[in-house]
Image 1 (spheres, helix red, strand yellow):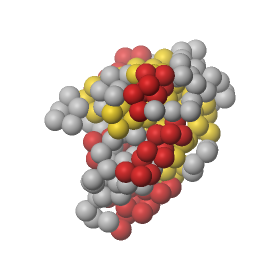
Image 2: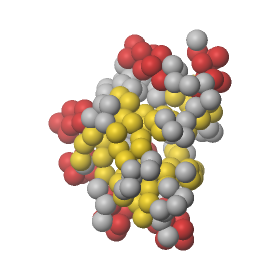
Image 3: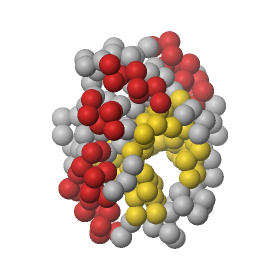
Image 4: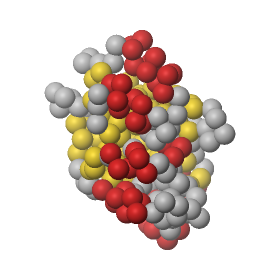
Length: 201
């Protein structure tokens, strides 16, 4: 499995991930928060086929490039079904046009690449936002944590839909994953479950 990160280095500095089967060259794009031209260049340069765009939550710094890439690559994009709650809230830190065109997955759903060789499980982890999720690859022991968990930190809870109590409940859930699991956060460097469990619990 290929996991490649692009660091979109504007003032928000978000991480964009490619999750690609090295044999089939089919993959997912996770949290394209900007830099559409660079993302498309990487896809074309490697001859990858992106089947879906997956979003860990609906904040603007994780979805700004979604519509452009979805249209140019002719692929669907998905967020947790609870993102629908923000469609009626113009003050949420998102893009209403993107939300209005989004397809949805549910907590516990398993999203597989064609051929079924690689699968990500959707783990609802509310707290940073109501629609926050992590994507867990049990086989390859990888977790895409969005803004739920960073190296040495957690996502903020003071924006619309944030809830500190829910965030730490979510944190307890994901820190029960195998300690060697590699964590790929929405911002900053990668870490492991073991390293973060030692910090928080």
